[in-house]
Image (cartoon, rainbow, N blue to C red; front, side, top):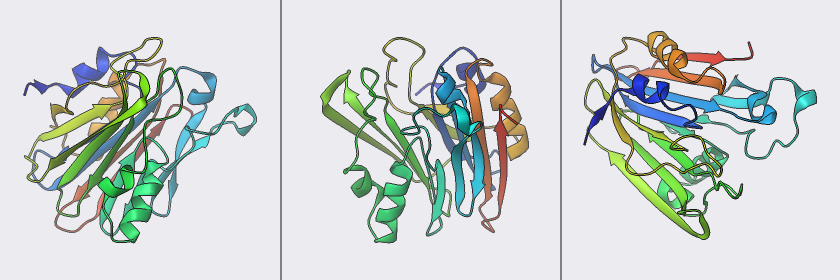
Length: 235
């Protein structure tokens, strides 16, 4: 598999939509998580990330301008039983509920499918990071735009390699309808020393017009301590 330069991938794609990066820091001491959202409409752009007891949630920057909260207001990140869940929709809560019951994220996602926003049928992308840094990614998508079939793909990474991660996003680029992500999660290098540096570099390379919010977390594997960075275009 080709090793991609994450920043170049972001810089040349005006609209990857929502994206998840999971991996391991170059010093092999931290699990790395990044999640970003972008938007083309005023409703999508009118959002910020805010901190919750167990992660983050999206909120309206200006509640008076909020039109339709469905699909854009949710918990992107939640922690449950030493697992960190990160997704692009309310399937975060579905995964958490199943984990509480002793079930798996695959069982949870078997009850869900892509978003009901035809003709885009936006894929649901999800990731789970274990306490020891192992992680998994998944995508639920329509069959080439046909909503009668949901395709579910799961990828497990049991031995993360220092300095590398995997990147999955909702769209291959801009378009009408928006083209869904294709192929396996992209292998990318992670060479930033800390969460602040990684967040700053990602934010700088996201399309200026379309970027909305970014969350980055570095989890120290030895202690479980976290270092979080949130950047909102609407400060």
